[in-house]
Image (cartoon, rainbow, N blue to C red):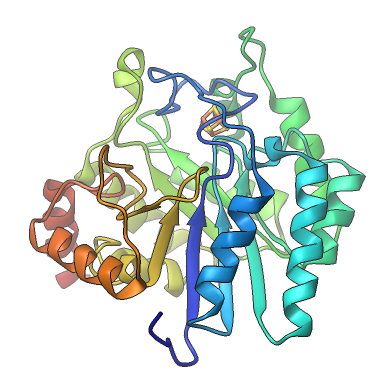
Length: 307
Ligand code: SF4
């Protein structure tokens, strides 16, 4: 595998497919079902082995569904593997997005062993969390809040991510106030647009221009939270162009994919060089990636040129 000198290599990893314990009303997996795959530690281990031949620093971004459903036993093994590689000079950093409902003291201890950076999903204004429900339709807000409090008090690094639906628009002042009150110490806030969703939640979807308008307003209220890093990321418009070539998307079975929208029958890649050149070709085709479709990328290009 080619050497990537000094670069942190990012792997977006889906150990359990799209399985989740919640059924948020805007979840893109509602129509497709939250499919489960039994997590296999060998898939994780062989992925690390393969990538370790080209770099000295790896970041794993854990994704689901709810990636904590891979279980504590699985993550105990992840901790052991991470520590074993550290002894031979490979740094593996971990971060992952969770709905927070499963977090307890044992999870906090596991996270501390490997300095896991936790991404917490929480919606604002806070009453919009009523869209986040258990399979029986009951709200999950008390379990979400309990998990969030454990993380806040743990001393672990964390960020917060909020979905911007149609119901969020126009409430920027209230959101800014609630963020300052709930997370006085945390400056890393991400606002993620609800562009795609299940068929019965079309009323929640926002357009690229609505989202851009929201971001413009919220940045002026809490510039320290919607930080430059996030804006820079958006400035790249499409992950495929600038971020994506540095990211390797690996599914539950260990197969490499070009983007987070797994394409059926994608050609298997044997080497990183092959993978990267396929990504570049894919971008030239300007496919509609799951992060930003073409129309929205063009909108953002115009918006940011005048920002
Ligand atoms: S927590 Fe995430 S994956 Fe789970 S139902 Fe909600 S949006 Fe979907």
